[in-house]
Image 1 (cartoon, rainbow, N blue to C red):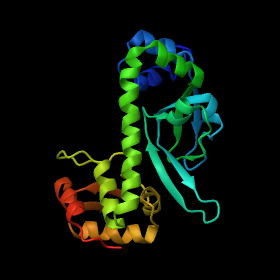
Image 2: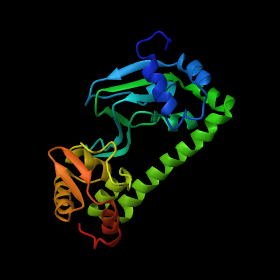
Image 3: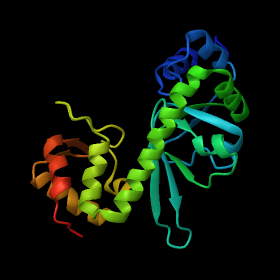
Image 4: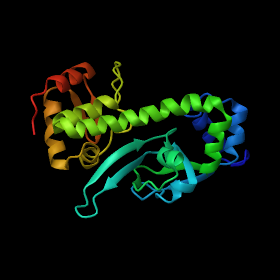
Length: 238
């Protein structure tokens, strides 16, 4: 991406504030940005595919994208990750150089920049300060997958839904849900391995219990600490 591009400043600010590139100085980020190209997708359309990510490393600039696995026989989907501005794709291909067979969908109009994945591997070797952020970022991704696997294996649907809200909310007075505040019940169901009707039933119970607020298509956590308590003491509704 050239410095005279109309998107350059916005892309630079996103890289500068992302978890992965935060420790790099401005000159290094500017030199890296020369290797990136911008790509866009319309909302609710397929985005980058598994073969793309063998050659390209993406950084999301604006919008959200869903990474999921699909059962080809039943059509059932499980969302593995929901990524937003500053997040990157695909860490798996970056590390093991193998195809990562996932389905990626743009939830909103999506903007992302991509650089040759071999260049990104070289940057990790050449810039120790990039490793200082790369390893914690990778750890967060692993913890997220561990949390998903744990929820699916040992928690009932009500608890999985409540824990999803907890993971996407900070325990501050605002209680703003991040990334998932306006998702449909069907999309929420895909994130916890359930179906729309079950999620709707548990959402109404969470609302009745005063734990969440629902205004049209907007969700908010009303009491983070009470929601945490509910996940720890829930009797196990199915």
